[in-house]
Image (spheres, rainbow, N blue to C red):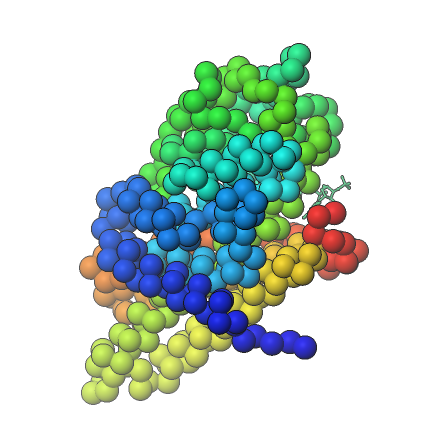
Length: 389
Ligand code: CAA
């Protein structure tokens, strides 16, 4: 039976996240955006109340929440400020490959580290010449005795400048394309790890985006995640698990813009009536509302499938693609409803429009999501496979 009613526990969690976003994030969000402030204090508070590391299993000290619960939290964080929300949620992306492929010892050490203290981790996949085309990466990991030596550079790394460790993808067989990639955990304090560049971004300016370089970085062989040369699939399985949360954050951005725009439309008077009385505005508001509802349903479905142990590749890309595009369209329409004021920084919606843009880019562009959807539709075998396949 299909039932979209949240349990009392889910409602409480959503309320906790919403209150946190309202009290701790919203009051500073526009200042942090303007100044590009790193939200250290908010990270510490979120960690304290249990809103970070939601997917770390209880046996490693985490709350062990399910994916749908994670999506409920991420929508509220996106509603508060998606830049700060991205900083809070990035540990989920970095740790998913550890949860899926890490040895018991690796899980205890690295998941335990994040559960014990408000520390951070980053996911190092993208390179200057390998964005959408993951297989084109050039970073290498060469086995030397009981170590791997990593060389290469990763860009657009969320929280990269503040992370205590990285999950890094590297070629262990340069000739084997996607079948020659392996994943590793790399400690930040090792010799040869450098944070090269903090990006100055259009939106999500309170999040940290850095370039991380690895120059002859030697790591113990046991820091490999999963099997050698199986890293590509680990990355794809990770993104299946994290795209629902990113999509939820996009819904949060859209919802925030929608609320500002509807409130404004009731106050702003033109031609003798509030602009909400004009059908031109009403139809925009109606379309915004429908898109947000539809996006949320796709998000919940993509999270719920994971919680049922099913492979959610198709649902995850539907959710990510539709929610990201919805965030962009709804925030653009919110600026339109504000008219000229929408273009001015004194008003809230231009930030949301800038923030929304990254949703169509990171964790797989909207074009890559369409590519995945087309492949999954044409080869439906994948939808039937279990999540851990
Ligand atoms: N789960 C498990 N296995 C999968 C899979 C999945 N979801 N998707 C693909 N595979 C398997 C395939 O079955 C295939 O297996 P075999 O070798 O056994 O046949 C193998 O992986 C290769 O698959 P493809 O042929 O589909 O691979 P491709 O090279 O054509 O790439 C792609 C597919 C979808 C384009 C992929 O490269 C991709 O998702 N690119 C986007 C990457 C991305 O999202 N980057 C963002 C990085 S995270 C970020 O944004 C950083 C941040 O800090 C926020």
